[in-house]
Length: 627
Image (cartoon, rainbow, N blue to C red):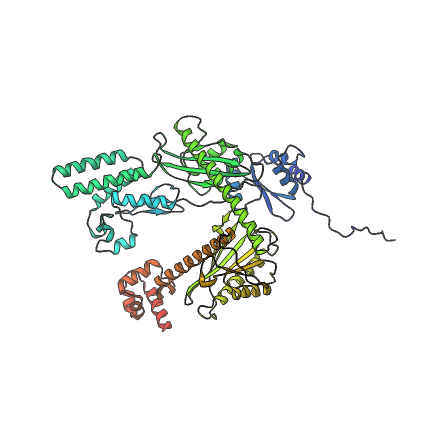
């Protein structure tokens, strides 16, 4: 006899989530330090945390009460957990920061703009070069920084050239020159490439520049003043005038550094301001008793995260790939300052101190940073409100169901079809999202030069084919709500055809075409199956769309120029295996041109400096086969 079936028979039970799932894991955990990950029913990472004692830490999540609203939501979505044990809590903290940066969990505090900051590098060379350096410190030499922006470095380098006249040319250029360049003529370089200064004299200039970058400016000014006085007394008025100019340039550099604290030689000043569920962190860089600028960050906090939690997460992620200074001044205490100081000290190989100053010059520095954080967040919230109103107006103007969260704008750039590049920019509620801009080198050889329709088809095909492959369920947030195409009915029709072929027919699209006389303000908007229309000349939404189109145009032209510049500098030598930049330069210097290399005999190639017999045969065979 068969048992009667119920309506739910055969249906798969929904996965368990919440406290019970976490409690099961607690039974199998020990007291080791480590990192835990909380995952939802689809395997997406919700949260990454570290623990000194995994069993005790995870057991807190198994309790049914006593959690903030944010943590309670996270627990309710947790369907499984993953664990990694470590030898120490410090190792767990380092691993936690790496996983947060890699996985970007929804419930963690995230530093969204994790860019590197530029430094000034004085290279290790008999005649050192002074230049801007960004990224890992792999090149040998002395580093000074970080500076808050490339502009701050460029201004400082410009003034340092006037004062100390150090070269900024590459080592290859330096070694190949026999006559001084223009910088020597305008007194921005001492001309070591052409023997205008000996090694000892140049070393003295380097020593003074490094003393200045280390904060010993008073001594340098005193020495320059004494030299100027001696030159004047010796009736060497031209030399005295040159020294006077160097003193004035040095004074100008010091003035441009801004507020220079006397009692703080090296520190990062980090201040947090939170309001309305949003946060701004200001970081000021103090080096050699000089303020080298500031930068602001807007971490994703998640509702309910407190100041200590946000600042703890920010400090850990901020110094993940950056060397910490000896002193970090904070506006709020961290959740675990001793552990953070230990981790940063181990990373730096020296002691790193964390402090929350309450009085004196250090407290004034923190208060200044906090004021900047408050003002920056206020401006950002105001801009966000304006952006929200513009997106609402855009939805109304274009008949969208809701304000778009992600707008993708496409444009092409080329010169009569040469060096063609497609460009995509992205905008959303927080403005332009420059980290998600993309450029597309046009690959198809079948396109007629200048075929804008064909180029747009290729770009959109590649873009959406990849989206369909990598994120068919549209869970990544990378799918647009609105496409803006630079062009009229033809471009819109071409894009619509491509999207239909790919099975993507639910994304709104509008083409922006120049109107009468190609006059800004008379743009026409084209949609599939609708008549063209225009917006009022003073409509804020029109200005917004113009900004979107102009930004896409700027990015497309910039990408095209980069591609064209690389093509201009390319030679047939680039295609030869084993010929890198150094050997390419040696061949060009020896033979004079790439054409001369292609015509050279095998014996001539073997006689070229740095070219082995085997490589000479490869080069000769390459051009012989090409011919």
